[in-house]
Length: 51
Image 1: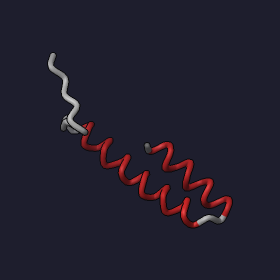
Image 2: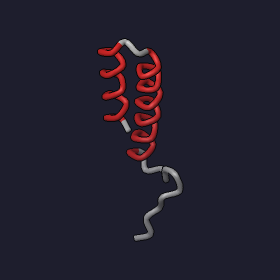
Image 3: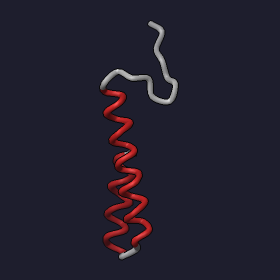
């Protein structure tokens, strides 16, 4: 998700489309939040490991 956000930011910047820029920022922030929660050991989206 973070990579997709960065790609959208770059494409939005190069083409001048502000909607891609905005979507890229939102996807990047959501991806960073999910990455931080996963790194802290929280179950993200109900995924749990039972071993």
